[in-house]
Length: 389
Image (tube, rainbow, N blue to C red; front, side, top):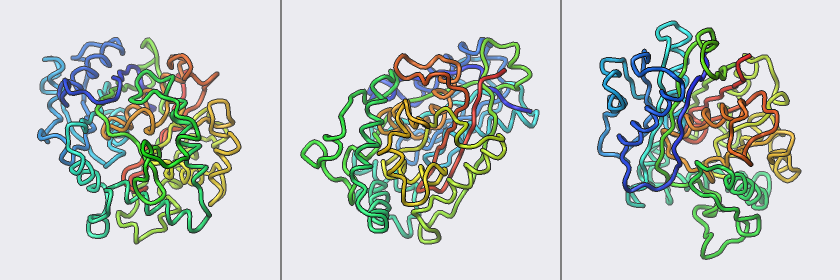
């Protein structure tokens, strides 16, 4: 049984002093239910993606979704967490509930509020997505972890500063057309490439423009079976999904390989019966530009060590052979951790139904690939989406 996305909601990502985790959950939950054209009482199960890790003092949040409507009271509600892939973990759990027949309608919500946390605490909270016995004292927090990865990549394959700046510039350019993006400014290659007062080095060779944003935000979607979706106003089918979990310590693997990413992509593409060349676009996890670069290789777009070709030869631009992050990615859109994977599914569904915002829409999009990653390629989730026929 295939699951289908039949409704969604997506608030802009950014810094919102007047919002709370609860208010954002309630907002997108109500909007997604209304968008699906169902009543709140039609929901059989609720899945909330919320990383938290110290960002919010309220750590027991699954039941906050019930605040959206009294008719949700007594529905099964579960919070899931898998680091920065928390949103996709929630989506995939909802899909399993549909496929197993345990639920006919599932509401999936992803949320995070990060900007109220002081800077040093943000780094400490994010480091909880790493292996603390080895990485717990890393300077610059999680950026430091990826700074180390970037340094190792540069040592093995040469200085990739141009490629990283091109990835940052691409994603910022794409983000201008995304009304949900936290940063809608086209910085250009020269700004992203040059180190300066407004773009200082953060960790290793990574500059500020190489790092995703600290964000507040939420997104939600409604799932049902493909059969039930035929009677709905719109539907996007989950053609395939895969989840590959790798070792947490980077010392137990070749961190430049992102092997879990490769395995997840291989499983999902095989399940879908397609190749990478069949995809119309990909939304991938660019928490740092070096991550997107390595993901080009891990997904099979280029051989190992040659990821720079994909960006330098224009393959991943919106008009390239495989547009990557037409939304602006985490780099421009923002990265409210629990919401990110849900956001990727919502924006991909919009693309496939021709409902993406003007300027962001990929022409004749027929098949979408999504890669959402938790930690340094530890939790790896891939989804393949297509419009219902």
